[in-house]
Length: 187
Image (spheres, rainbow, N blue to C red):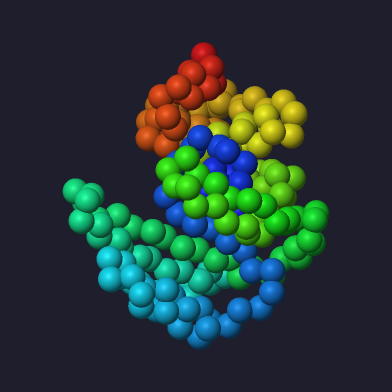
């Protein structure tokens, strides 16, 4: 449902460092913990660092060690257990997930762009992250809407954004040929 879904299902260029899901049917905590452990059984290069249930979230952190990579990397999995209504077709649909870095593609239930728009607006109001600004802009492009972030009020005073923080964070997660969007916002 988050940045990774935007990248794999809707071709967003933004890198996302976690996998976000929402439950559309009950999934007990014990079953999640067993599943989190089962995932690593046939994968000697992957270990489960942490698996737990937080308030409204099932969380797992995996570490992957590939011999051809200079460093290990982490995969963070978060599943929202908030009591929400999800309507097939309106809020989620079956989509083909693809990536330019692998020939593998899979079918998965993915949030619709309309649902992601609503969820990203809520996220932006709560956590004020630059990546949410970019995701809203990207979704607006796909939905043929206009989105211009309001950056006028400085972060400490009016709950706005620090322009340097926007530039710093989004340059980490966007390819260089997409930095122009950030500069347009900062103009």
